[in-house]
Every structure is written in structure tokens, then in C-alpha cells.
Length: 279
Image (cartoon, rainbow, N blue to C red; front, side):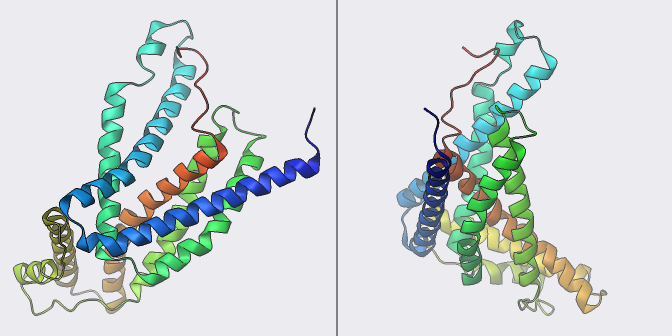
């Protein structure tokens, strides 16, 4: 028996609601981590990193397998033994695990350094927009994309679009924040000044914070001394590029977690593999 339009519409609204609740729960978890990280011991920091690492790894590995499957469909015959050999295994898992570890650590350090309240407000306001865009892209691309690769195609398009808008907005806002005046300091003094401003209970987290803030100090110092001949607007543009990198290290892994939650809610990642070369 086919579903009536009203029941189908209710199912769509129910999934959107579950998605929005899931994203709000994720934002709440990240907020709790931000507050708790400075007082955590090494074990708790590693556990928090693992909590962020696992869903990012699962998403990256699934996306990579889907991309490899699409490549194999184009270049190899279904009966070729290389179809099975090249579909992705331990080596792919290791490379994606390393990338996921980098992104999880980048997100963890960003949280430990503190996220501006405006960024959290923007993320909360983006939750309903994400849910509507997710459903809208799935509906639009359903007429154009392959059914098998529709979820990953729509998700990548949404993630790249959302990342571009968020980075542009947050980095532009960061352009008007006051810059530290390092004109009278040497490079060593600037790095030491930034590195000394971070505190954490965990020696591991303190080392990561010291390293990242020292790099920030070096970038700010180089921007002010190598480009000191530029006018004020030019110097701000250089600083804007620095802020853009910093925001990317938070926004990109955060959006990957959003995508992972979205796939779980809609059941995409739970679909069994099909097609040639799949046991």
C-alpha cells in the first residue's frame, strides 16, 4: 500500500525535526567540551578526541569508498578481479584515519582555545537552514544524480556551500577584530607572548595549545613586519587570511560532524553496498 501525501509529508517533517534536534545536541556537546577541556586530564582529552575522531573517520571512509566505487564503475569491467581488489580496504582506512585524526585534533584545539559566542549563535541559526537545504538538495538532485550516489553528492555540495559561506562570514567578521600590536617585539618575543597565554590541566593539551598559539604569534608577527609597507587595509587582508585558516580548522571538521549526523538520521550510511565487486 502506498503512503498518502499527508503521511509522506509528515515523515519528511519528522526527519527534519530529528535532524535539527541531532544537530542541536551536537552543538551542545561541543559547547560542553569547550568549557570542560581546560580542566581535563590527559585521559579525558584523549577520550574526547576519540569521540570526535570516530564519526569523522566513519564519514571520510564511507565517502572515499563511494568515490572509489564510482571510479571503478567507469574504468573497470564488473567481472574484473581488480574491481574487488581496488574497492578500498586497509590502506584506505589508514589514510582516512590519519586525516580524521588531524581534523579531530584541530577541532579539539579550536574548542580548547575558545570559540567566540557569535560563532555559536551563527551555528544555532544555521541548524534549520541546514535541515531545509539537506531535504531541498536531495529533492532537486533526485532528478539528475545517480540514485546510488545521490546522498554523497548532495551532502558534498551542501558541505562545500555551507563551509564557503561560514568561512566568508566568520573571517570577514574577524577582519574587524582588533589585531595584536607586535611592532616593538622580536619574533621570539611574539611567539613567547602568545604561547604563554594558554593554560590547560592536561600536559598534552597544553603542548598542543602552546604549539598552535606560537604559530599564531609567528604569523601575526610576519604579517606585520614583512608587509609593514602595506596600507592598513592591506595589512588587514593579510590578517584576514590568517583568520580564514583558523576558522577553517574549526568549521570544516564541525561541518563533517553535521554531515555524519545527517546521514545517520536519513539512514544513508547504513545502506548495504551493492553493485559489482562487492561481496
